[in-house]
Length: 217
Image (cartoon, rainbow, N blue to C red; front, top):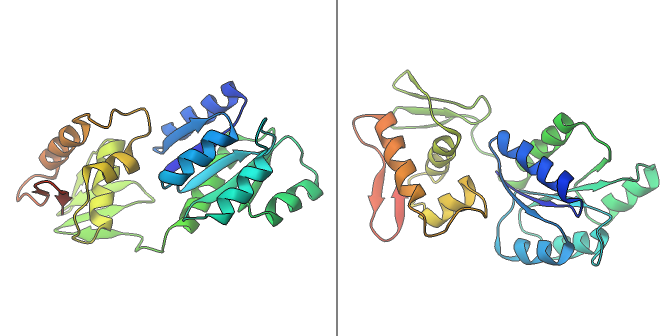
């Protein structure tokens, strides 16, 4: 899951981001509306956590522009104002959900996950191929009945390969889905992660490297 945090209170923004990363999400953080619109224009986010009271470009204007050019991403609006009228205004301008500050972090996580499920087409709850059985919600993986202990990144990479249904998944796509903006795009981290994932999956090998294109399962 790829999440964008748009919050001008830097400590709060960074705290939210760290917490969501602990929940195995790839998280980018920006502190103003202009940069948020730039990022959303070229990065496919599942959920955008948007503070309403942004300086320079107000969160309302950011929300309207995001909705006007909407891709798959869902918008969770945050604000210090918790009145019903404020929440209604936010929803009417196109936000998908609304959470007043202060909030309980576990509720934020639950709302982000719920919005993410709405941002993508329905998929089978269990992904299976070549003896591999991956449960995205229980975060478990088995191969031929043998439970595998994968890191968060290995799990996300395998999930992307399974969701592709035999199609080729580029290294750029894997970087986008499993890591965040802080990763060096020229890093060999995908290749290294793929090597450890293949080792854990065991024989016979099921992940194919498609030269110049990416990987296929």
